[in-house]
Image (cartoon, rainbow, N blue to C red):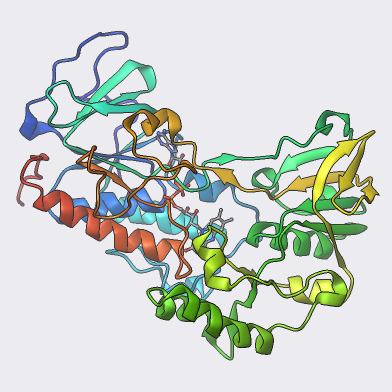
Length: 411
Ligand SMILES: Cc1cc2nc3c(=O)[nH]c(=O)nc-3n(C[C@H](O)[C@H](O)[C@H](O)COP(=O)(O)OP(=O)(O)OC[C@H]3O[C@@H](n4cnc5c(N)ncnc54)[C@H](O)[C@@H]3O)c2cc1C
């Protein structure tokens, strides 16, 4: 990895300088915002096309999101279908790769491909360059950087979101977002309410049970589709890949019987089968829960399913069915915001939910040269999608004759 942090950055203007000299068009790199798997894959793919790509990462290391995930996390997607382009994950990482090995892999990936990465630089706003042929990035320390094209890879799970529950401030127990949860140790012997049953909430509930919490309740608003991570060696991700481009209604119909065969009926435990189709849900933005112990824990009564949290009152959580509970801690596995508004919201490139209107090779009609990766949540696995989009983006930038991104010297 070529890390430029703390080195003289040739494209940076001095803090406070109003109008930096614009680099010659042919000297403009492609800027990639974010040094997670999506940004690193895009930088590699651009480099493989002979284009100079510079990754701008706000933290001081690559893979910042993965470094923060909870300790027991393993990929739900298989190692082989989670590789980024140009470097396979080693076999010794096993089929379900651990969080620490994902981080090792991302570090190695940046080093192996000699990616140009500037750490400690947060991009706050992207604008058209004054000459209209590129993009001007406003970044930490008053930097103004002009790129031929820009890839936004700042992550789907950017900013933790906790609902603004009425009376939240009356709760005197511990309230944290799942993004701040590391392991069950601090909760041993305690009564914990996990709110939200996505993959993260489901796994944290199981982790708490195994780690000795005295009581674990899981608050559910919408019953999830639950899948076995693997059945007789067949990873559910393989099915996700196969059906990725089939019509939604067909996949919904196929998924019903498969779900009934592989997952027991948990209605008696508060988790009836969902009445909307699995793939319809994915299209609405919610991917199925991959079982890593939830089914067993619910069946054995170790995780108690309760209604959605509506509010807090007098220090208690008020649930949708009127029940009031008073746990020692509440862990809100309630998702993240994309938080792209400040960065690109003014460019009219986001939909009503704050997601980019395009991804991969396509750029918005009103913002040519502005690419997005990592803002979809496909059934076939996000890492796989990031790898595919990286190649498509690089191909599109290389083909775009109007944007003369600087080329790497031929060796
Ligand atoms: C708990 C969890 C488990 C997951 N498991 C799987 C799995 O098993 N398989 C799978 O395929 N996918 C999985 N995913 C989804 C996805 O693969 C990961 O979220 C992945 O890290 C997404 O990569 P990314 O590069 O798009 O975003 P991130 O990894 O979030 O990287 C974004 C980077 O951008 C930086 N950044 C943000 N804003 C700025 C800015 N303004 N300026 C500069 N830098 C900035 C951040 O510091 C960060 O390093 C999981 C996600 C989560 C949350």
